[in-house]
Image (spheres, rainbow, N blue to C red):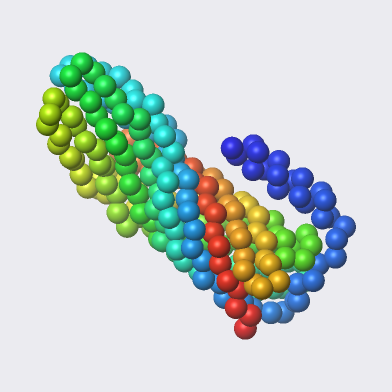
Length: 220
């Protein structure tokens, strides 16, 4: 998915490289936005240990949501800087795991962050920008959830694991956005995790986040 995302960015950039930008320099804007996330955590395996059985369950991507806003300053006709803040739901989910009469279902870890992204935007043509920058995130909650099934008995588990996670996360966001004539903005980004999610683990587990948002840009 990452390779296709970057190829799409480069292809669109090549098409619009010679197109004239219509973005006015020296302007400010505010943009509230909301959207959906598809996330995972690299190198974070779910080790199963039921009645002496050990193994690893296959993982799924975790689907969440995000809400926030950003302020943008248009420095030149083509170049702008935007800083934002928002809340995002991230995590990882595993497939159901069966062993004999036992089954573990809906095993997942849920992570909540307050994100502060700062990105540089380059407008290739009117309304369309490619972007990259830095993002600082602060962990608000972390829970491990799942259901253990034994016969007709189901036991739901929800454990707070925030003390096992680093409270600060750093990533590099890259992406594209397009502003329509009615000032509705569609934004797609991939956040490349840099820091370790685990506080005490020897394995480097990093957030991997794709998010798509819809916003409205208010000119100031």
